[in-house]
Length: 83
Image (tube, rainbow, N blue to C red; front, side):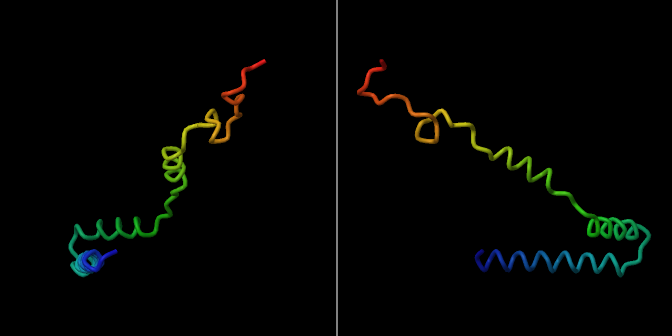
């Protein structure tokens, strides 16, 4: 990561932290719902296994075992005729 990207990420994290702190300190009626939602999101366990399995299935290589170089059974050499 380049310094510009690092600085941008730090600034974005700082802005989000300040936004959450402002919501917490505001004590307005609608901020209670936001606080509860943030607490729910930050404390909920997330099962990422199905997502990883889906991505792995999408990235799986097709079955190329029919190609001799990739592990398939080799046929007779080109200069030999089958008997």
